[in-house]
Image (cartoon, rainbow, N blue to C red; front, top):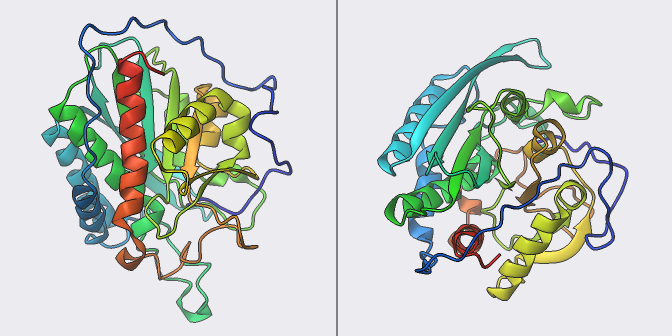
Length: 332
């Protein structure tokens, strides 16, 4: 996950107005298909297994063997689910001066469709556990069960469903961003974070690429998770926030998708919004009843499978599937 560098504003979802940097889109009118597609059932057991498989490689820090092995696994899974896969290799200099060898992994479904939605998560893990309560362990790498693997696990299950139940009138691009979590903690340079999404936003995987909007998943597997409305999402993609939260609450997931507004943060969606100009929201577990910025296991040695709740994975995954198939059915 990203640093704790916050914007100095809190924006109410229904009061916020676009500024001159806001990404805007004009949705393409879509006729309802003759046959309505049923929203597939999200398999929480499979999603959990996808999370566990990533964690089994160990910390997925760029330039490590575990990172390379996990990349091959993710590419293989997307191909297994009938996605057209693009490996977008890049090099980026970390705040430490280290040159990171990164790869954004893109799985395209229905690649010729003009209407597109992009779903994203970061697949790398942090090189240090700099928030660990035990100072002696702060040079260890983060295992990243929640911060990284949970979002990817959910999207792998979404990919599996898209492969089994193809959508003909809507394209979906699943992007696993790399080198998100190698930023400088406590620093003022937000651009030291989310290096993969910065590269992708400047160098799309397809020339002339455009998506109507995007959804980022980050730390979406925790127990008793709460997904409030953070201010970057509300500022740059207010219509998408309204659409997704209304749908989630109508599906009975109000306990997860909170209407509370919280401060914005630097995450992959910030750069997709500001550089790529694609409206993207962030579904992220942020405490709303404590003074903590992030969950207790964030950037610690405790970010392990013990913190992953299958019910949380299902809540997020089922909402994402509902968004896609309702869009295809002309209901959103």
